[in-house]
Length: 141
Image (cartoon, rainbow, N blue to C red):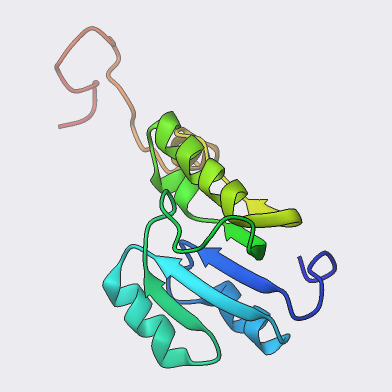
């Protein structure tokens, strides 16, 4: 990220929680505003200092059109389950970005946690010997 962001950029860290990314971006000299819907997260972020933190929503960012250099959208896209809400957050990020601005966005699919647990073998004794039965599989009580 650091190699892409121009020096002294104005950055929105949308869904930034307690400021994991905001901290290092502010330390690099950027003007960072963290926006998160959870008051307790915003209060913890404000206690860190070096950047501002406000309660807000990824679908309604507190900025005029085309005035932000960089938007981080690294949490809202997997907390917003409805596809239209995800699109609203992406449209809103696009709205506030200056022409040529940079958007860093990340989403996680609905089955990511299930897939991870299955790959790591964290499901024990799934199902019954007879998948149509409501009785426990043999050997289990």
